[in-house]
Every structure is written in structure tokens, then in C-alpha cells.
Image (tube, rainbow, N blue to C red; front, side, top):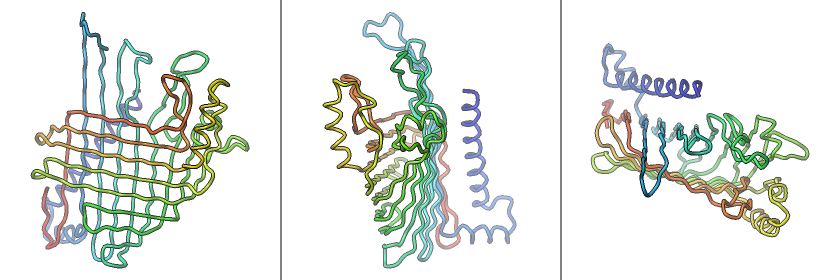
Length: 355
């Protein structure tokens, strides 16, 4: 826990210092005329921005007839981007990270995560005809700390199912990108590769993330096609922002080597076998993430985030029946907290503006 808190503090500090320095340089503070000219020339075509927030929630109940759980929760969220567009070149980069915990003496486990992920994305395109680009992207994502599930033998949440870097997903693709403006882009590639690396041997041996068990391997390799739609816009004098990314990945290969028979009991197999056959026919992944932000003032904001995820290689246990199957996953986060939004960019005319 101490290492995690220290890591989050370091990330937020670096984020604040980096953007503060760049923003100061863009304004031309403490720069000579020649240095300012070089800075403006180097930033021409670039657009920078980002948001960082820390949200705190506390719920307390005493003799409350309707019941309730005393709990404290924290959520750290960071998203920053750096886009370059000049001539026939288009280069988009962004980083996203979030981590949240809930602490309660009345639940099991007493300390649990409610969010944990980080992602790095970079896409470069070269214009070949009007808004059409020949493009390629790389995407790397994982999580910060351990995740636990309930053990079948002890009924306690002590079985590690994930940890920092296990699993780690890497994607790369080359294709066409339709980008008519700075708000919307649609990318398609029939040549996409995806690798999932599960470094921890104990986690890899479960085959939970689709890596082969016989013969054993830490890697799951996929080859297929991918469709990515991105949209971002600001409204009401840029006090309201929306960002949405939809990714659909189709695997040409057979896919998951994990048998549901190894997860379910014999009386549950009739259900799991049907779902397993359907899952091999579908054989695609969907990830749709949307964030809506409302800027209250310079340091206070409200955020709504939701994600719809279908992973063809990750079986989900039904809470009512206890049967493992392949299902869509949903999550949403609503929070109000401290935020820092240093949006600024370089426009034509060698004049920096702050937005």
C-alpha cells in the first residue's frame, strides 16, 4: 500500500511539473526573444491537454433503519494527450491512468479496489487523400497492483488473479484512418496483432487470460482486424467535455484455449458448453469507454465515466448461478473532486493560446 501511494504521488507530481513547465514556456516567461521564437516554431502544429483528478467519498451510518455500509473511498484519475497535425502528418498520443480503493471494516475484503488500469496509446498517419491517412498505432495497457478473487477452497478473497504487468496487453496495427477534423477519427486495419503477456507463472498457469496451458506459455498471440472510432468535443465555453473511444477487435485465430469445464462443476457443464461453442463463433473483443467532464471552477470538477467491455478470452462467473461464461462487463464511475486541467495548444500564426 505504501509503494502504491508513493507511486501515485510521483505520477501526479510529474504530471503537474511537466505541464506547468511547458505552459510557462509557451507563455514565453523567462525566455529570450530567440528562445521564444525557437519554442514557438517547435510547438507549431502541436496541441496539448489533459485532466487529473482526485476524488474522495465517505459514507457513515448509525442506527439507520434502511441500513448501509460505512466506507471511505478514493479515486485517482489522469488523462493527458499530445497531438501533432501539420501538412500531411497526423500524430496522436495519449496516456490514461486510474486507481481507486474502498476501505470498510464491514465488508470482505476490508480494503478493495474499485479501479486499476493504465494505458499508453500512439497513432501516426500520413495523408494520402484529403481526410484519409495511411496510419499505424501501438497500444500498451496493464494495471498497477494485485487483484484478488474468492478462493474455491477457503471462500476468502486471497486468490491472486492479476498484478502489475500480469497481464500486460500490447497491440499494433497498420491500416487506414479517416480523420476529417480534430474531433472525430475512424481507423480500420485488416492486419492487427495482439499479444497478452502474463509474467507471473502462478497466474499464467490458470490460463485465465487465454495463454496456452498445454504446452505452457506466458504469451497469448492473436492476429486479426481492428476498428477504432474516437470522438472528443467541448461545449459551453469548454466547461463541458466529452471523450469517447470504441474499439472492436476480431481475432482470425481460434482464440481461447481455456476450457470452461475446468472452471465449472459437472452439473453446470450443460450451460457452459453451449456458451463455449457460441464464444468460438463470436471470437471478438469490444471496449467502449466514455468520459464526460464538467468544470465547476479551476480546481473543482465533476466526472462521469462508463465502460462496456466484452473480452472473448475472459470467463465471468455469474453471481446467482455460479456458472462461468462469456459475458459483457459494465462499470461506471461518478465523482466530484479536485482536478487540474492545463489545456493549451499552438495554433497557426506562431501565437500560443490557452484554452
